[in-house]
Image 1 (spheres, rainbow, N blue to C red):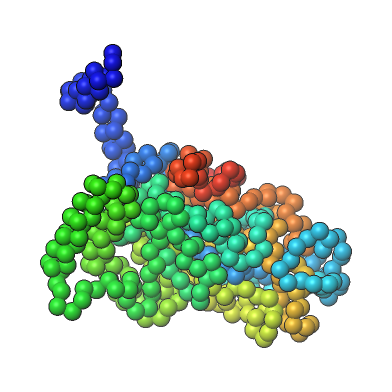
Image 2: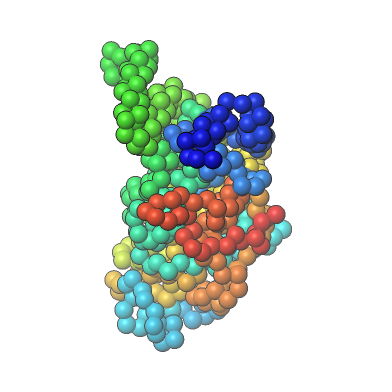
Length: 484
């Protein structure tokens, strides 16, 4: 058969009943499967085909993710990693073996060892260790899987945040939330699939932490505010009603469609999709992003103050967002960089004050999700970009109790979404310096999050600049020990 006849043959295939029954029936089955798994293939908010048509690679344990990132890196030694031996070494010179061949952000010379500034107790049936900095959180430890030996190669904030959130210490890669929505889309066609909420200040890594990188920009995170308008410039200009706005969006997209037919630039499809989504958000966002109508007992549970920009308000908003079908909600709370460079900046007063602002809210989030039956389908992730050293930094003298950046071992935790309850995986040495059991990498954490959403991190790829990229680069293993 020559090329011309083959072309005619291929074209005729698509017009026959036999072709439809033979080749299209699997697609119809996939659409049915997607709806059974809780997805909405027609509400992906995506302008181009996504991986496997938005169907998970396997049955997911979680439909949503709420990621609580404590930007600046909280000290595990004052929160979850109880080390009595370290307390006995308090004030002694740091052994040379802990310094030789190591790189630190600020430690110079021979620092002093620093015992924990918090008191620890065991709580719940799991007997998990939690410090007195988080008294309310201690009541929900039986819902938690602790990862006590996470490690990273990065020891400066921005590169470590990029590695944690995008899989690479350099800018330009898609964020974790972008990969999730690229792979699965959004169950709610009136809201973005990936929403970001900030509290505490400006995050070191900036807005690229929730960017879409080389993925179509429709997958980037949409930053919302808990104070004032949820999304800036969402309201119609004065004198423009909803009908006129819809007409203008339709006219703009007709022009965009003509341009796309000529250039075939996929970003034009992204632009069209975002115009449509923005129009739908004008009616959906104000209601979802308002906590005023929440019952008083719920506001008290979280410790919220309506009208403020706070971590507590953002936690309540996160619950409202997943309740309304948002796939990935990312909370950044800045101000956890406790170097001890001044009064109120150390792991004593400074860290205690930061914990008092999140303790009730994150405890309330877990409690609220559980009582609504949402915790089983929502994966909660908590952690910073690295940990803190067991020795004192003492950059500004001996009067301030601060710790330097430390990537060799730190604590994260997960809850809900198919992870074990009341479980601890991993262990550090007697002073909390290095992992001795259950060591996991940042890429392992990312692979596990995707796994719970039903996505294989090795199969979730995007072809760019001549090769396939993935979130976990060329490494990463699912942490199966913490999964049910």
